[in-house]
Length: 188
Image 1 (cartoon, rainbow, N blue to C red):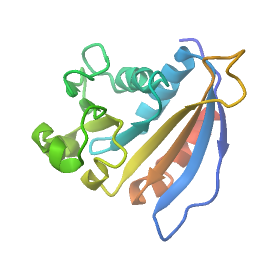
Image 2: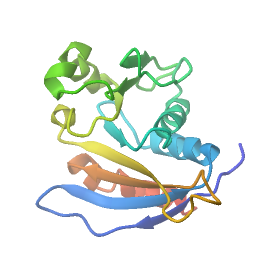
Image 3: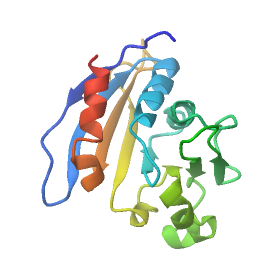
């Protein structure tokens, strides 16, 4: 597999009162690099992990999730679940299944999403929720927030350039097993 370069920098130290881990910001310059980032993040994920994806339409949330699915070794093509709300991709091996949710059309919080049984799926799965900010945080004290934004000042020349901010919340991501390890992988 061809190595796709990714640039990473580490942000400020954890904030003890909130349990927020170090933030990592990565510059992505193509859809292939976004998928590669997803594959690398997948190497850090384990059953019970909740990942929230935020970004405008077309930012690359589903492309990142495709990479997560490839890295987790799940069955089925990872596509946007906008119209079905949630899709489950079983593992082809020993890893956890991927539950991919699109909360874009859901206006309420966790109560409106209760029918999806995410709380039941979470312990044995990796749950990825697009547009989940303000809707599903109650599912877990430990979660990974991924914010994808177009790089400011690059619109005319580099339309595919994105700034991806990864911020872990909770003890699971603040203890060196999360973003610290990702920053190490990206610098290799």
